[in-house]
Length: 163
Image (tube, rainbow, N blue to C red; front, side):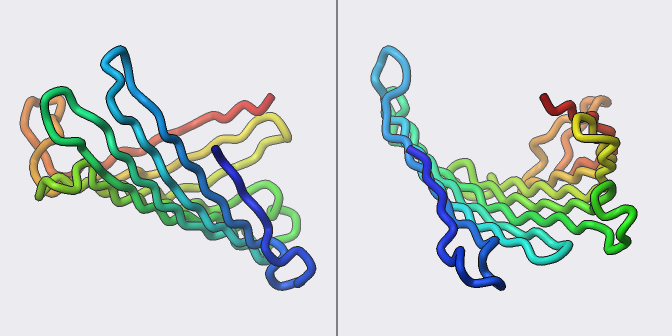
């Protein structure tokens, strides 16, 4: 189940505040193992700035072992350029995620950071250039050379097609 609402639609300064959440209580696979998901989101825009935060948690059943629970916390923002001719075309994007895939295990945290520039060519096509950085508590990411790393940085160029 997912729901979102605007708590203050009649207040000019708060009419863009949106609060949402979701839950999923189910079973996974033939073994009928627990699969639970919960999350909450808050977003707000004012002028050229959009900001938001999200928290998600999960619990999964494991065969012959204790359930595994984890969580993710995210912060994100979009800043449109305050130049009238470019405001609907260019924006700066930022996102940060902090993920703990197993609450009962130490040193397994993953952090993910994105900073980029989005260019909306038209209503159907956007191009995004961004820098993505992933860090981990331990050296768990494998490089192309075969060594293990606790940090990875890459540039990405994305094309977004909207239908």
